[in-house]
Structure formats: structure tokens, C-alpha cells
Length: 347
Image 1 (cartoon, rainbow, N blue to C red):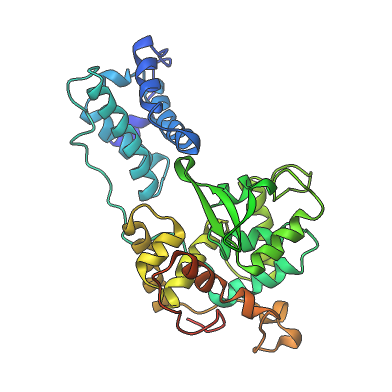
Image 2: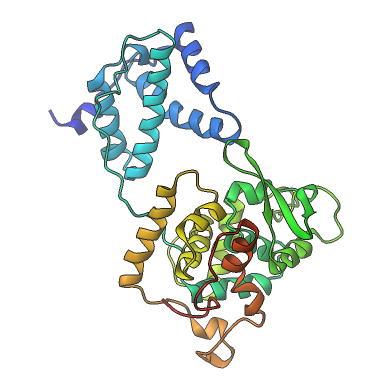
């Protein structure tokens, strides 16, 4: 019998959670807070639902069950290796907590074989020319929040939940620089310096409002990641950027790779991107090297350049193009000046 046959067999009715299991889940989730807790709960819920569909008590699971769960994510759900690794890490963490609390003698996930995660990031950012075209389309958009969205993600490197969660009251000034109070992963609060172009984009989005979220959707409520994805894909179509399934994460990827292309030290890029582990930044670097080997910028010049001129350049490229490297390095210190000057040089 193959794994596919085994997974497709009818299962018993889902078993209800016992008080012992509820306590174990609550104890594990109590280790997290904020968005980290929400994401961990979502990943753990996937495993608990898998157990419930098969009438399996998670506290009675053994290593073969964990191996079957991994194969189910790979072969049935078709999850990518990073997703499989992340979700199984949550499951392994749950069992480790159970061992610490004395509910289990040993963890069944201890010797489970984890999938290999590629050293390079699977996400590909926009090329320099594509990013320039996207900036211009956002600046000329009738939607007042498009320019702020692209600028906050691509020129400051905010995560999508950080940008959509930012409020007008989070704007301030520190040592003569405009800053934005950002609540990042693990509810860590940092002050992010704003380049002049980003400040103007935010001022345009805020208008005369004195409170509430910076980014709003078409209904006048706080923009979420789904609305941001729709706006980004609309802007990519308007700018003539030929790319499949554009999403906000690509702009943060562009922010990191632009700094690396400009010759910024890896440590400074890690600080600017607020990566806890330098290996995370190195994944972006590996992906950039592999992508550059066979990359050709794909942008529709007729959609973004006057009269189809191939020498098209945004009007205020001096303030937009140099912002990712120039703005972020000065506040944090320790970086050498970027090479190449602006975003206009190709890969």
C-alpha cells in the first residue's frame, strides 16, 4: 500500500480534545505573543487537525506518525520545503514542551527526518528597472495609498504586517530625523528612519487625518495583506511589469537585494532588515547571485517610458533610487558608501 492509498483511507470521527491535550497546547502557545503566537497557533492547528481526522491522540503519537505527517504535507498538500520545515518545527516544539512539562518521557519528533531547505530564498524580488517602473506607477496612481505602500515595503523594507499595522500616531521625530514606530516580530518595537521620499508618500496617504491607520483600503478601513497584494498586482499590470503572482514579500526582498547589489556590508543589511539570524540575510544573498546569473529585466518600456524611450528614468530618482542603501546605513552606522549610486544600473 502506498502512502497516497494510506492517506486516502476513511478515518474515524475526529476525537475530541482531552483536558490534558488542551493544557499542553495552552502551555506551548503561552511561550509566544503577538503575531508569533497567531502564526504558531495556525501551524499547530494544522497538525492537530491532521491527528483528529485520523482519530489519533497527539499525545500518543510516535515517530512513524510524524513521518506520515511530513509526507502528507509534501505529497498531499504539496507544501514547499520551507513551509514543511516551519510547520514541523512548530510540532517538534510542541512535543519538546510536553517533555519539559512531564507529559511525555521523550519527543516523538526528535528523530523524525526533516526536509532539506534550500540555502537560497525561494522568493524573487523585482529587478531595479521593474522596481523603478512600479514606483512611478504608484506615484501616479489615483489611489492615494499606493505610493505609501510601495515606498514603505520597497524603500524601508517593512514586512507587510508592519506596514499595514502602522498608525498615524506612530510617526514621530528622533534626533532631527523622521521616524516610524514599528511593531515587528515578537512585538519588538523599533524606530525606523524614513527617507524623504517615503515621508512624502506617507504624508500624501495621511492627508489631513490625525489618527487611524496610515494605509486604508477602498472601503476606508485598515488595509490588510490581501488588499495590499491586490493593489500591488494592479500596479504591476499598470507599470507593464511582467511577473507572475506579484506579492508584497517581493518588495522586502527587493529592498535587501538592492542593498547587497550596492555593496553594503552583509552585517549592515542584516541590521537594516532586522533579521535575528545572519543566515536569513545570506539566503537572500544566495538567491540574488543565482538570479543574476540568468536574469534579464522584463519590463514593458511602452508602458513606463515616454515615447518608448529606453533611457526612461523616474523624475525624482535621486531621492527614490538611493534611499534603500543611503538612508538605512547612516542611522545604523558602520557601513561603507554604496557603489553604483542609484537603482538605474542593471543587473
